[in-house]
Length: 405
Image 1 (spheres, rainbow, N blue to C red):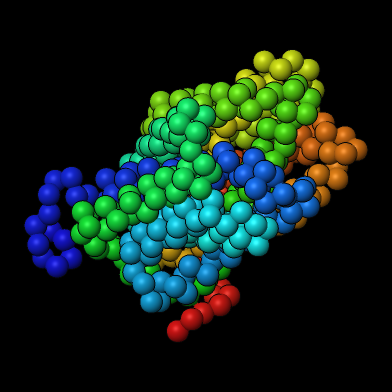
Image 2 (image 1 turned 180 degrees about the vertical axis):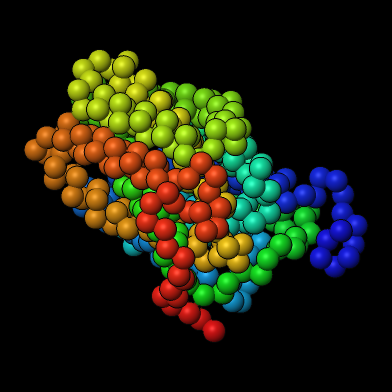
């Protein structure tokens, strides 16, 4: 039954809606990401300075993701997730029509607001709608579906741009329009699902979630090193061209299609403590490998393994699901997204300066961050639950940091 009491079809289930929406994101983001450097240089005469500003602007909505909780005072969560997809699609679709510095700044912010709001809401809805026993596997399937859609998108970009010779504006329009179309289909085809628990409509910071916040912060720091500098290493040190980098993207996508659901199941069997221990121990090796690697093929292997390990970060989300008050999921999803983006504001620039002095030092600090995360992961109880959030440093008091009544 849906909220209005009508009967719904067997496929009109929350998990199917989540999978459909997950297909929409890569159509826009992969299109924007694949073309932005060439488009910005060729059509908007970008230099490194403008590109740096553009990337910083792209990260600001992630840092402000906590603001989603205030919008939820006006719009229900499922509807807002679909509106965020539309916003992302529109920002991407319009990119090619505004080939100026200001135009790219504005369309990037619109795209990024939609992307970061959607990612925040997807995590919240999945944790609310999916049973704890199946959450890890479902998150793995969402990653797999997104990877599959990304592969389709890269193939379409190649066909549209390199084979058919379409202009940038039409490729951007196809990618962004595809995302908006999926959001419209989801709006029309699915009922508005009930939330098991009414969500808290204010920002809260609960001290008993401190380990979750810390894990999310460290995850964001490590991810910035991977996103910004791992690919840069391939190009600068080993001379990888656009073709080779694209092949790496394809390999990552194919691996995730098959591995992510399996990793989700593995987390369900192992538990979060063991899964994160394996992830962080593996990342220590990977980052140390980046620091000393001298072979291009080995470097590519490290890149693929690095990307695969990040799929195991599902365990951080399911750890929170197990310890959380059900009413805290939506506000904490926004808080956690903001926490993970704190470092995105300054870390790339700071490490860019360190890169000029010593590229291996950048990855050595990544190994140190992974080691700290490993110590944190060992503080997760074998069976986390409310009141049993950590092995050491247990606290229970909730502290509201902001409210919107």
